Amino acid sequence: MFAVFLAVFLTACSVEPRLTSLSIVSIDTWVKRNNPDFYIEPLASPGTPMTALIVPFRVNQNIEYARGLGEQVTKYVWQTWTRDRVFPKFLFEQGAPAMSAAQAVALARKRGVDLAVTGAVTYIISGGTRGDSAVSISMEVFDAASGERLWSMAHGGRIETGQTRDYIFFAKQNRMPEDPIYAVTTVLAADMGGMVTNWNYGHKPPPPAAPNPPPPPPPGPAGS
Image (cartoon, rainbow, N blue to C red; front, top):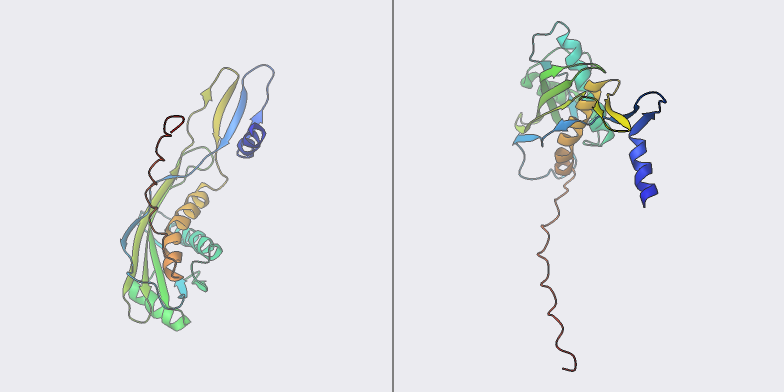
């Protein structure tokens, strides 16, 4: 059992042995976040799984390269939802200019899909491999036929470099991903996509667990 635990632990870390100083153990960082917020969600699943189109997100911060950054974050969301099969058909209108919800709905109709997905990068900071990185996004899903807003959600997370911690025989430090914005965004997209997937395919959450049965009565006295 110990060997299995050790193998699992070592897959997420690396060790730099040193003869004259503390060895360094590098641990993969993880995305810190809470549960996503869902402000609007449908009451019932569709009769058949719906298809969708996503348009580039706008960036709310005053950043010089905002359009390219918004498109890159949108691409990460699109890749994650495509991987997770949130929709049986999911188009990405790459290179499209910023558009309103009404324009996105009209484009979804033109492309022959059921839903239009829009969004915004409400906060983003990239520290690369040496600093903290954070992403916050909001997303909305509209019915292409009626223009009704079906989903409204938001989520945010961060990756922190942390401090090197010295122990008696080794020092522990966080190992940052090569692209922290990708790492954070894909985790956020997966969190939000789970709810949409369950709705789109009619999955229902399992019923609550039944209460534990009462314990058996204590045995009677010997010879009874």
